Image (cartoon, rainbow, N blue to C red; front, side, top):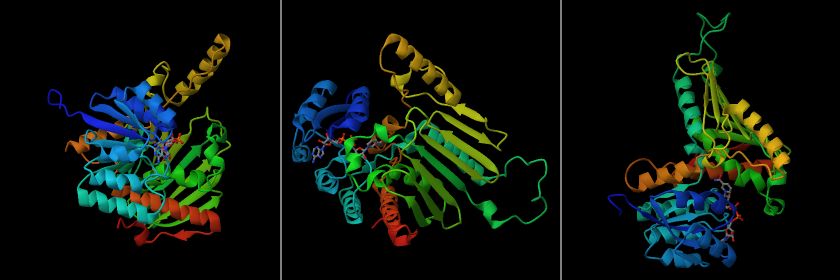
Length: 387
Ligand SMILES: NC(=O)c1ccc[n+]([C@@H]2O[C@H](COP(=O)([O-])OP(=O)(O)OC[C@H]3O[C@@H](n4cnc5c(N)ncnc54)[C@H](O)[C@@H]3O)[C@@H](O)[C@H]2O)c1
């Protein structure tokens, strides 16, 4: 505790790409956290994380992190090769855990983590960080408002006037398009049979379940789990969410587009930097959002600003004979961890509880079955039960 501010003593387990680019810099920048231990089974990764991000010590054995008396929060950033085996004893030794997604590779593992969290009273937050992206939160606010009604502004000819409307008119339709570029992936993607459909789609399944009011009842995947696929998720009220994922996109083009329609209102979110809507006269049609802090050199905002900044940056980099800088966007990583600290201090909800991540990860596992069989799969209440 420093002048009434609680300092969370943190260990990062798994100091690979995500930890180095996201979690370790965010922890260093956040005055509410002190980095106590950087742990990785690869001694060079642990040592360089310690040296570069000012950890008090480096560790190569996660059991030492579990046993440590001076750590109260663990950030787990390995792949799913390490989940329940670490999380459960960490909770039992009194630590809170922020774990990267996917929550766990099996339903049994997930339910064991939920049980341990309940038994110990220690919280787990899952890294479905897009729930904390400022643009995504605005998209959700507008979508909730659109669904509550009244219906959107009327067109010049409105055949629905004075008539009972179709049951379909009470549904919400959502498109999630992910433009990915396989050239930017690391080598593991070639040997991981579950590929993107499990490891990456949990972000978007999480949002689809979060945005839809009714439970998911059916899912269908057309395409292979590695990357080029379409997913249809059907909900109990008849609403559908389509997820389109491509691996032959260009990484310089904005990756994530969300477009929802409800109550004759359209709401869209482009790559965490632009939110648009048509149909609600009391809301702006366009709002733009800041890029990630390390990309504050890019001044023009929104879709047109992003495209113009990219074109100019490519020209400048070529003239100056240096690599082109990415424009990083704010996908909510730092806000997600910060909201979890608030929760640990009793000042707000857990931004992504382990309970909410179980159905998400379970649906992802069912999608793998559909992709393998080429057939739709039923999502039963048992699939969505937490345990
Ligand atoms: N939330 C996001 O936006 C986001 C983005 C990328 C990756 N991720 C997730 O983050 C996780 C890590 O991804 P990455 O790209 O950093 O992978 P990575 O392979 O670069 O890093 C993983 C690190 O964990 C270490 N490790 C593995 N097993 C270990 C063990 N038993 N003990 C200690 N260290 C161990 C490895 O040595 C490696 O350094 C994955 O679960 C991935 O799905 C999330």
